[in-house]
Length: 561
Image (tube, rainbow, N blue to C red; front, side, top):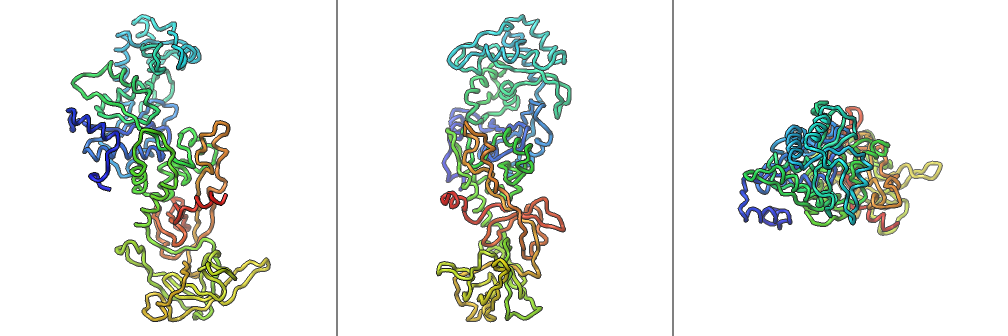
């Protein structure tokens, strides 16, 4: 969809209205401000697409700013992962910024607020502060330390900065209104003492600014014009504006905070705390496990940047939180991979087929299209021989007329190859079919131009030559949770809804063209689904992850249940 074809979302309407009212287009600037305390997930992807999409729409710069004000939870690993994810999604930031870049400026402004009588050092315990904060229907009460003198506040605050006090001994609070109907305005904390090394500033600081104090002031320092946040920050806007009121210069751009709704995804959780729990308890194999909703996990599973951007564009921007069915995301990746993924043949549940009238010891190479949707994708050669693998589910001794695969006395076409007819089968001691004996029509080779090659049969099967097949580990991933909203149950822990069948590891047999496949290469295993090469692969052993099936099979399973 082109920019001219699509309608504006409500945030774009706000920007357009600002431009009509005289705001200079050249002054537009946006930002994406993640905290580096975990890996980005699909919810962040929507925010990334929103902010960077606005940058592209208005030809405006977008900053990547790390909100690194809590050294207890933040790591360089997360910084690196976030940068990698944003780049992988196809976006470029104007400047890379950190809240820690502004620690000195924020401290200087805090000193200014103390001198103006608008901030004070509180020495209550956290429990005492919580008790005097009041409730949504009852006003709070003032701290006994609220009216300390400016000099006493300055001395204590400088002592906090110098590391003279233990954690929790003192905090710096803004002096606003303990009777405000907005509890966030009831003397919010601006600084706390933390004796922990920071991933950038090491031990230079013993005090760290709180989010509400840091965020708006950082926007102002960077001259961000529109600060876009999710709905949980709507109540924070009043405080955001109050803090700006204390420092803004009328000659500079004043940032404007506006909120949009989260788009929650079914059958998953996106809370970093809960995702970390999945990692730490070994439910998944790290932040980039293909079952995780992290961008790293989706990339490893085989999702494409185009599919994720398409998903973000499809769900759009709204004013109310909503639960989006994960099948919509799966549709986007399926739709994109259908256009770009090469077709190959692989058998994941093998049944041996012997073509009895095919010459012993012979082989031939058949031409196969790489992608019928893309003529420029060309073709490849696939080996054919006397002994093949097909899927077990593609053969039955007896079947009704609606079974269009192989059955005794019946014919099917082998993809890109010949028509075969099942003559007999062999069973093991338990009665399981272990081999099917077939004959082939020697003149029915696909594309040969003979009358027999044009003969129609209702079934077409994929296959691989046993002699030439590559063995590979294939990881069949499914949804991590059985419930569509696993973290919304008040009486149950979200871990109770873990899907015990979210991963099955099997051995697959692949056509030999895949021997040189590289990590993150994506393919359609014909009739089976889309798969990609996992980083665990080596020169000795390929590992493939199932990205998504060819159809939405989950909905059918749920209907049966």
